[in-house]
Length: 246
Image 1: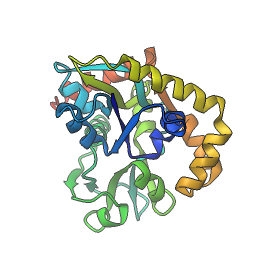
Image 2: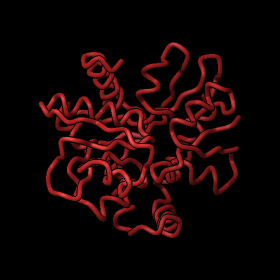
Image 3: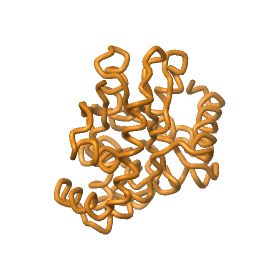
Image 4: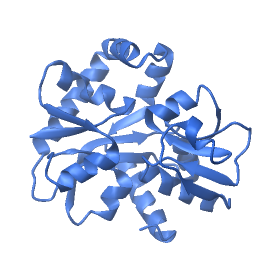
């Protein structure tokens, strides 16, 4: 079976053992592309954006592997050249879940900001259009070292609800049984934390990021759907419906 992988740092630890020992065929692509590939049956199983999953629950089954934040997520941010939130926020073209999460947070906080879609993912390009920008993934990690972080959306969500924010959830089409793929990722996650120093060292070489940050980042994420993650996803769905996003 073909397994999809986010092309972001947040998938490095969960897939490290699988790729190191050649345990499965891995296809790497951005989240929205992976979702399309599942629909087109080009891959069997992959993490997909949570918002996409909620919109398509009738044709998808989900599994235990996820990408969730327990508080600060460090890689889904609103950044700015200034020190406060601008009334216009440029949003990256790579986002599906994060932009709707941002809409919920803004509404719940009573903030009236215009979101401006931009066909780019780099903070420097987005900030040419607006005073603030929503960036995700590795681009957000780079941006936090250059620009002011106005919002960490994982932290904002936790303060709002008290639950983890599930950004990605593993899925397959309903008629595909990918339990074996999910079990393989579960083993890889366990191996990754048992051999944490090796994983961090390799990530340090691959991504050229500070070791201290990588250790903090990998430990800030939840990779398995527990009771709190399931509740967090349910609350996200409820608020998406309440605000007319679903």
